[in-house]
Length: 240
Ligand SMILES: Nc1ncnc2c1ncn2[C@@H]1O[C@H](COP(=O)(O)OP(=O)(O)O)[C@@H](O)[C@H]1O
Ligand SMILES: [Mg+2]
Image 1 (spheres, protein in one colour):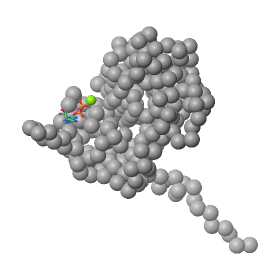
Image 2 (cartoon, rainbow, N blue to C red; image 1 turned 90 degrees about the vertical axis):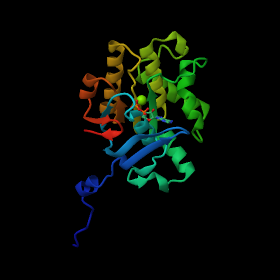
Image 3 (cartoon, protein in one colour; image 1 turned 180 degrees about the vertical axis):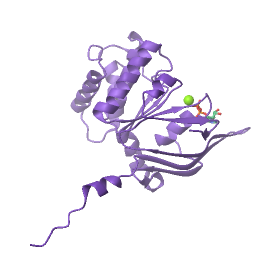
Image 4 (cartoon, rainbow, N blue to C red; image 1 turned 30 degrees about the vertical axis):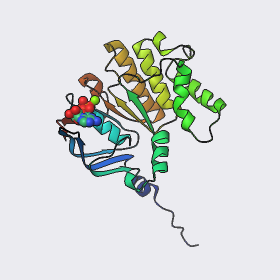
């Protein structure tokens, strides 16, 4: 009998590209009066399932880095690849779909809409999902709120919640779309240490249990040391 030639699974696994790869990235902001180099020669690969912290002083380019990773802005030089494919090869429609399906954002100041209820806030990004009906939207939003421990607060409004609870709503909003990657920009920056700790534990659990890849900007060394890898910036340059 002839031996069959099946591909070796180990070899196939070794060739999986990073979920995000930034190569020789430069970002220059140009205004009328001043040119700012926010990022200079940045090289970062984020693998699927990693939890990476980004640290550095204010103004060193951390938020710029996250907006490039989230495909919200374009670098002035260098390439960004998602799953091994340069983003410049995606059409506008494909890029919009990538942003909406693959990436969830969490911000320091929550970015919730105050006159929408908690569950309506969480549903909001799902309105842009083609083919998703109202029933599925609601189900997903409620499941995400359950995941962050807020199932008793779905009818509340953001103003009726603590800072930590608001950030949980924002995390639920990111989760509702089942993203592969969560990009969190100083998610505990407005919280006291107890609430901040809860948010970090939640992100760690989402990473470990649900396999979500997380890139988190933080000023807190203790928080950062809980993650697998720390990328450090100073003045637009990667220093570690
Ligand atoms: N839209 C923008 N236009 C002009 N300059 C900007 C813009 N966004 C950020 N910058 C500048 O780029 C640098 C990096 O900013 P940022 O990425 O927000 O840093 P960080 O998040 O580390 O505090 C800063 O000097 C900031 O003033
Ligand atoms: Mg910032």
